[in-house]
Image 1 (cartoon, rainbow, N blue to C red):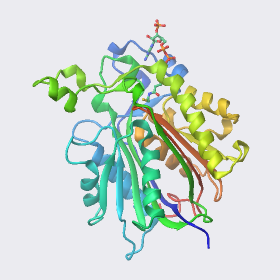
Image 2 (tube, rainbow, N blue to C red; image 1 turned 180 degrees about the horizontal axis):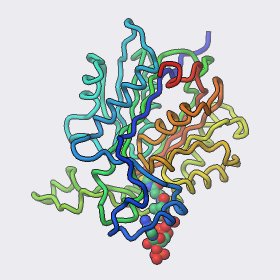
Image 3 (tube, rainbow, N blue to C red; image 1 turned 90 degrees about the horizontal axis):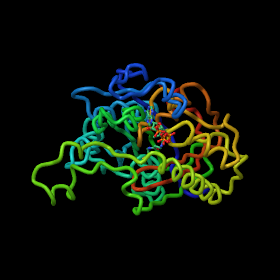
Length: 341
Ligand code: COA
């Protein structure tokens, strides 16, 4: 009998209704639709707006993924992971509240902070737990409200990031089933911690100052350096995952990379020796949604009937930390998110 593995069985994405096109960005940013499209590929992003938190978006995406997995009454979700850099509170974690709002009883629930690599880290964590027999089903959500940490006067970040959430349901199955997560590769390099960071709001700042510096609540990013590292790390991580699963790059049907910049995705494909037709992109509509970007790209592509059962997918991400990670999986039948709309 084939070895135990996590199998993708549900998928859902949620973008808050308010779209912000490039032309609608605040005038003070001194940017243009032409620059943003040419340098990033982004045409619009979604911003959640007042009173809407990461947990709210996570609940919407989680609900859609659970519905598409069509779990039976006897099936219990034993683990809920919310990958996010914009949690609802420093304490408690966002995931237990999300699990409770989704009616998932007393499932183990925790947040995972690995920047834009968070979803791949969470997928790997849940897959390991299912393979080890710690749960039979897991809900993995990437959710962000980056609009809450954007400096409205910083054109290097404010034009790029968007809000959203994407989620998958995994169940314990076997490696020979379509939908199986077959290999993962994870890595980090903390010497690059200052390349992208939110300086305030944590213990470091509180240990230094009784009053927070208002500017320190914003994301600061060294975009050019991140660009170079992102391509390099995702290329090597992808190669490691492919080596583990034993696929040649030509056998990969779809490259689903973290949606940070269309030029990064194209440079990555070039480095890997893949044609652009295999690159899945969603950044045009949603911007960089950090930990939500890969499941949102999956949900969008699935809704457009892009994947067939047994297709080979390579997921790869890079983010603040620095962190990176990749996963190789096949596409399930029927396609989650379409069979049970
Ligand atoms: N609108 C107009 N001009 C802008 C701009 C904007 N929104 N942002 C930067 N510029 C300007 C710069 O000031 C610079 O001007 P100068 O030549 O007069 O100095 C010029 O455009 C080029 O800037 P540069 O930083 O070299 O642009 P870039 O092509 O590297 O694009 C990013 C900037 C941020 C889009 C790109 O580096 C990127 O996507 N990096 C990765 C970010 C990422 O992945 N983050 C998430 C993971 S942590």
